[in-house]
Image 1 (cartoon, rainbow, N blue to C red):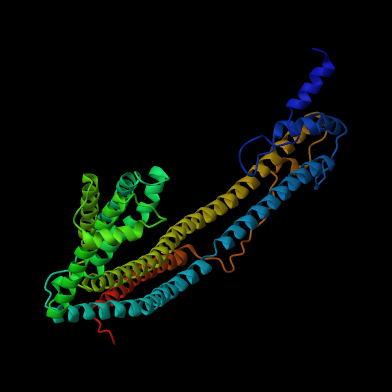
Image 2: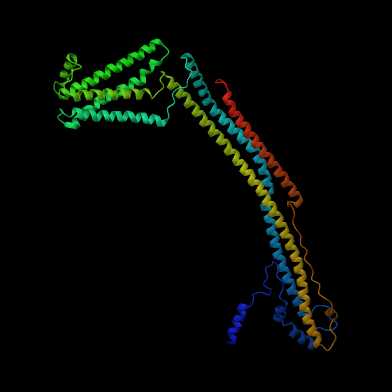
Length: 473
């Protein structure tokens, strides 16, 4: 390998400083390298051959002074690094900000209870009106049942059951459309389509009127009042007359080649007056029977949509709706309370964990700071040893080359003046005091947690008391 290339590689492999590469804050000086860089042995022999320094010298000669100055510079660099480290430790201790955490605990203690009480009052204000509506609805239902001597609950129809019944009515309507359209298509100029168009009106009148009578007239049959029963009988009779008359009219209409125009209407009225129950075509009787059948099914299905006693279903539905509104609102208010309580409990848990974490970090910072100071002390000792090694190499080479005795101070070890380190402990927590303060803070958090739980239970009890309140309370 060329000498120049070897020299370059040696420069690349050589550290850019006179410290041994170790993983620590204050690295030891590389005495061997410094000795070689300073040429101590060679310079010692040269100056010793000239009997320099003189035997009577009491101060360091230039070479010794250079060694001492180098050691002092290394000491100053290490001290500056220590100062930076201590400043960083102090800032980290300040950033722990225990005072703010302790103040936060007091805020949680005061704010948590206040927020729960505020949420309670809001919930009570909202629930009071809804609970009063429920109480009034229940009282009205009780009076209604008492006045009508009803001991049974009202009919309860599930959404699915109601949907099925409505679907049956729709199917009846469709069946009526199709049947009427088919039987009326024979004499209609528009055929099946014309028959269906005519059947729409008849189907609505047949099924629709049956449902109306079932909902608003038939329930009076079960009324406690005698005259109300008569009204229900009138409704039932009206249904029979209407259904028979409508479907007979439809059957006769078919036989006179039912047309929307012309004299078909007059002919039907004449046949009803003269021979209402005489039909010439058997299919007309089928049309009549289907119409009556659809009408009767619609009547029964519509009757089952509501409770059989007049107004009872509507009153009971009002009570159920008021009860559902009250239950939903109370459930929502309890969930709001639980959310507030859980938020504070989570905050308290986080505060406790944060305090423990910060105490551990405080102890680690203090321990690391003490370790850094100890390492600086050891580093000063190492610098003193390095200085004596370097001085010895120079002095030994100097003494060996001298013709006169060496100065007396050559035989004395060098003592490095120590730099005293001062810590600024102002506003800094003492470990014992901090541990006691954190212990007290965590005890306060336990009290806050218990107080929040007790307040939550009291709040729930206040909500339960609403069920015992009078409407005017």
